[in-house]
Structure formats: structure tokens, C-alpha cells
Length: 407
Ligand code: NAP
Image 1 (tube, rainbow, N blue to C red):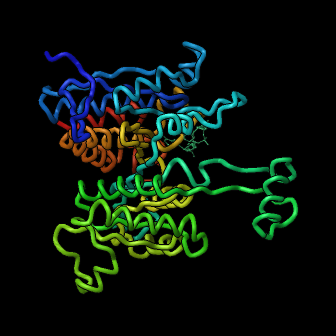
Image 2 (image 1 turned 90 degrees about the horizontal axis):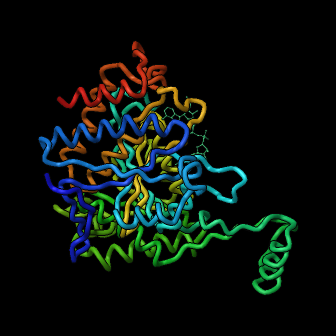
């Protein structure tokens, strides 16, 4: 048997993934261990079935969160972060935010320390999960949300503070701003370099996955120099880096009569409020959405609701150097250790991870088997209470059922 090895990169920056690959995982807190066990079984089952035992993941545990604190007194050690950097790919369960430890959130800290600038959230309907939409099967989008700036940069000054008085005086006296007395102030930075790397990632994804459009979502009619600039820089990077693969929506109508030429991706933009309407009314017109942080926060959860809720929504946070795949919900502490909750969010994040490794047959097998398991009507409590005639099974039984459908 080949020795298990780490992922490396070739001179073009493409991943080289050994057949026996070491992947770090963080089990997570609360319900994390339950959903992680089910996820590991499903991923291992899919890899083994898809590649007849030729490929295998060697899981390497990183102690982060409560387990890290118990083992080595650290919620998130530099060593764990270095392991993720070194292995380039990791997967994690949800982590508790330690109260009173001066940490805003472990998840945010991981994103910031590793500069995981793109939060990727695919939103795809899994039949027959109950949905408020008439035609939920028309929803198949991937959101690229900027992770490092906009309101996420956390530059805020509280009403009445010494800091806000200074900022307010500067804005009023030197910039001529008209501010109400005692206003709290938040600062929203959006930069060309961070916008361009995010939009470039979204376009690369669209190219690799044959998506017909990338939509820049913004509120540039009101916030011209942040959100409006995001739109402009988005178009700029599309033309600068991908001219042979993209056309703008203006070009589509001016020179192609609205018919997308073979092999091209249309780059369009929509004002945020308009996009919220259009993803309800005409969801099949949108494929990849690239957006600053706050819009991305809103649209990811709104779209997840359209396909039946956050419990089924996978996610990843990525940089150009590494990728961390994660469940999008929290630790659901009241269900910890009960073997009860739905592992689908982490399992589908695992499928995204397999795609990222280039192990696409295994990724497809995870998705199709999960869908078959849901269709069979034996599902975890959250889905059982929504699907007529469904029978509730445990988290681990649901995982085993998914593996069973791979045969
Ligand atoms: P939460 O853990 O997401 O749980 C809220 C509710 O969502 C649960 O009570 C449950 O609803 C439902 N839910 C969550 N996960 C589920 C699953 N796997 N299957 C079925 N239903 C599920 O949110 P929270 O209670 O606000 O946060 C708890 C902790 O998680 C906090 O410490 C927070 O900081 C942390 N958190 C971590 C992450 C992350 O690691 N990425 C994200 C968010 C929050 P019902 O009870 O109605 O069934």
C-alpha cells in the first residue's frame, strides 16, 4: 500500500492529491462529534465504492474548540492553523464561541488567520425536502461571499465613546459630514484587491463547472464608493483576466441579440434588493453570485430557506492556498450527544471537499445517495417533522442508510 501523503501543488498552482491522502479534521463541539462520525462514514464509503479501494483518506484530527481547550489549554492553537496551511484542505464541524475568553468567534478567527477570503455556499434543492417555493428544483446557485472586509472588518465605535467623539469630530469638522448627535459609527471598507480576488474565484468556479452566468450583487446605487466600486472592480477583473471566456450583459444584448455564445459566461450585476426579488421569481436565471460580506450573509440564508433551511446547506471558506469545508449551522448544544441531529450539512460539505480534491465520482455518489436516503422517508427529526409519512431515525442511522444506498 502507498504511504499516505499530503496534498501538494504543481507549478501552475493545481492540487496534486495522492491516492492515499492525509486530511485534517476538526470534530467540532456540541453535536459536532455526532455529525462528524456520520460524515466520516459517508465520505469513506463513497471514496471506497467510487474507486474500488484504490483511493483512501487518512483522517488526521486537530484539537480545536472545547477538545483543544481540554487537551492543551488552547481553543485554537497556532499549531492547528499551521497543520491546515500545510495540508491545504481541512474539514470541520461547528465550534462553540467561548464566552468571556476575548474571542469574537473561533470560526471568524480561523477565517481571518488563514485569510480564507471566499465563503462558498452552494444552494441546490434536494427532492423531497419541503420548501416554500412552487418549483424549488429551479434553484441551483453558488454564492461567493467576501469574508474579510465590508462590515465583517468589525470597525465600529459605540455611541457616547471617546473613540466615536474623535471620529465624529473628524467627519464633521474636516469632511463636512452631517451626523446626528450620539450616533454610533461603523466603517465599511471595500478594496479593489480583495474584490478582484473574490470575483476571480467566482469566475474560475463558473468556468470549471460550466455555469452560464456570474452575477455581481451590490447596493451600488446608494453606496457608490464601496458597493458600486465592488461592481466596477468585478467587471474589471472579468475583462482583465478572463476576456476570452466572458461577455458582459451589455455585450450579450448589443452584439448577440441576447443569445449566449457557446462556451461563454455572461457577467451581469444586480442591485441587492432587486436580486432578492429575482431569485424568488426567476431563480433559474442565476448560477454564481459574487457579493460583499453583508449582502452575502443575507442572500445565503434566504436562499437556504428557499430549498428547505440551513440544515441541508453546505459551505467552505477558501483562500488561494487552502480550503476549509464546514457545516453552516452551529453546535446545537441542546442535542449534543443524543445522536439526533441531521448530518447533511457537513456531509454535503464533504462532497464539496471531494470535488475540490478532483474526486468527482465520489462527490456525486455522496449527493445521489443522500438524496435517495431522504426520498426513502427515513430521516432525522428535523426533516421527519416536515415530510408527511416520514419516519425519524438517528443521526448515525441516517449516515449508515446513505452508505447503504451506495451499493
Ligand atoms: P445552532 O447551533 O445552529 O442551532 C439552532 C437551531 O438550528 C437548533 O436548535 C436546531 O433547531 C437547528 N439545527 C442546528 N443544527 C442542526 C442540525 N444539524 N440538524 C437539525 N437541526 C439543526 O445555532 P445557535 O444555537 O445559535 O448556536 C449554538 C453555538 O454554535 C454558539 O456557540 C454559536 O456561536 C455556534 N455557531 C457556530 C457556527 C460554526 O461553527 N460555523 C455557526 C453558527 C453558530 P430546532 O431546535 O428547532 O430543531
